[in-house]
Amino acid sequence: MNLISTYIVPLFVLAIILYGLKKKINIYDSFLVGAKEGLVTTFHIAPAVIAMVFATNLFLNSHFLEFVFSFFNPVLNSLHIPISILPMAFVRPISGTASLAIMNNIFASYGPDSFIGRLASTLQGCTDTTIYVLALYFGSIKVVKTKHALSAGLFADLMGIISAFLITFLFFGT
Amino acid sequence: MVNKIWGIFIIIASVYMILTGNIETLNSEILKGGMGGISLLSQMLPLLVLWTGIMKIAEDSGLLEKFAKLVKPLLSKLFPSLQSNHPALGYIASNIAANALGLGSAATPFGLKAMECLQKDNPQKDTATEAMVTFLILNTGGVTIIPTTVIALRLMYHSANPSEIIITSILATTVSSIAGLLYDYRKRRAK
Image 1 (cartoon, each protein chain N blue to C red):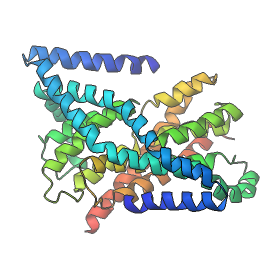
Image 2 (image 1 turned 60 degrees about the horizontal axis):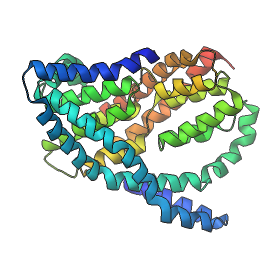
Image 3 (image 1 turned 90 degrees about the vertical axis):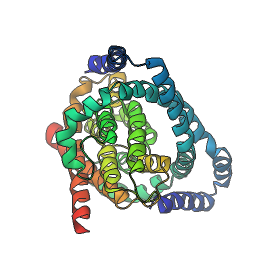
């Protein structure tokens, strides 16, 4: 699997360049036009990225989540669900790096082949950072009325989290 | 709604940190807060510029259009409002493919480009179109086939079988994507 993902990018680039040459287009000129568009896009998304990273970092570093989840500790302990998985499930739609950091902690303390390690792996793999993606993509084209995009994204995340719990349980038991 | 979430994050964090006596941390977080975004942008910028350059070659040579035609039957069901030769479809397909292979950072330029194409036909520039919403649901659902980062990290911690979670991830991601699309479908029908 790792082999596939190592080869896919170089082959992809090579295929595009060879196809461009075959069609006799000016590949270098095309590249420059596209690269300039990318530069402009980066400037367009910069305010949204800075704003979102600022707010999420502030929120995560306040340790408010740990405070909230500490109330669920007794319930979770009796169900044998380690406490660290809840903040991870909650943080997953907000920040990819933060949930990755929590997963890293889980691996370090329980091991990747423990039930919670497998659950954390599935959680990390099954969904993307909804709130960040929405802010970035809509911000880049200055759309402010986003209709039901956020509620649908969060609904999908919730279903993903619940099914990650159930599926990991079914496949690996406790 | 992003407006509210953004505000709520800042308000909760500030109030909680003041109440718990972490005013110093709050201060430095606010003053240095912009750096996090800048460092993320500086990581994204080279990749974004390079990929939009490469993809422009694919677009000019007609490769992107070919790819879009290939996935057209599936995508046109998901995006009934787009015509089958719409340029956004090629970018949407590339975005989904890159995400699926666990190349999240390579997927972003395609996704941004797809949004730009969709915005061109948008009559109300400040309001999301149906196609945009559907695309973002697909995107945030993160249809991942190979979660590369997770596997790499499991390997690092000496997992006996680092890739054993691929199947559970695919199943969970399928459930979440289908749930999101059904939600979207119902919302659209309700109008």
